[in-house]
Image (cartoon, rainbow, N blue to C red; front, side):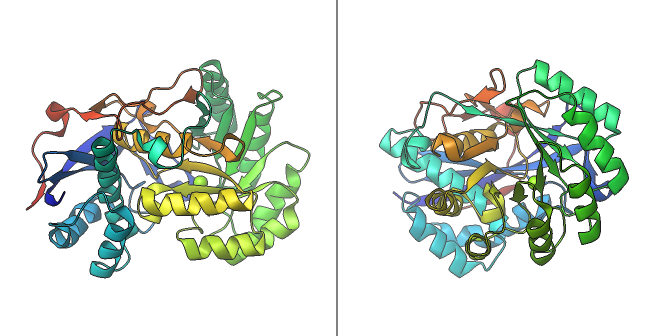
Length: 367
Ligand code: MG
């Protein structure tokens, strides 16, 4: 089986909440997502999705996905999409860095492997654990009262895990965390995600001011070294996200005992092949994970679901259902939330069928 054509589609994904805000005044109103279609000489086609969280979250931007595909795509014509590790080596040799550009192709080739073998991706990624898995809800940065009200509303919908977007004024952030914590019950999980928004002394002030609460601190500062200093002093369970962008940083952080939970995003690491490698290293090290992506719709959510469902339950801290945040559905068959939980499809591959009326004409064609 050989890749004989690569297509990419651009899809706009507006939000039900109209805007998503996080540290440093950053926000997105409409997500710009790229859906990648990889076709083969045997008629099997697979799909993937890459949707950066704007151009100011990670070193990734939406038009960069398409531009990168135009550069990388021609090098992949003729490759066997089922040989995932080998394909990733070809991509890395042909195009240095830019993991997010490679992510959509890698996911699409896993989709092809699943269809070719008749197996759902979660079986190929290691096996299905349990009937379903827990989701977290990201709470956009607003006033403390507004965020507490959002949490109460999403708790009514069944969510039990919440990720508060903090990383603003430390005094207001302390109020945000306290206002939300007051709405939670035993068994709920609360993460205060600063998304690199605090400097070291601010992070320590916030952590000490909420030390009596059951709360996790996520990626307080911009650099790994600042985060490590905060982690060693704060005494609260600690999550790293933005700092862990490849397997080498993950190995270093595991060696430093720099976190209790890691947030692995598929496109941050460069696809399912590399995220599975990082996931399995965390499993072997007893480190729990939030498994997700930077953003996306139905196809990204399907890929996330297969990765999450193939992760031992006790080490899956949470994951997310991006397709419930956005107003546009790009595929049939994508997993849907039920009472704050989700499960991966039993169908071969990702188990999705893209909606051609939503994707419309490709913006990239490589053959
Ligand atoms: Mg995070």
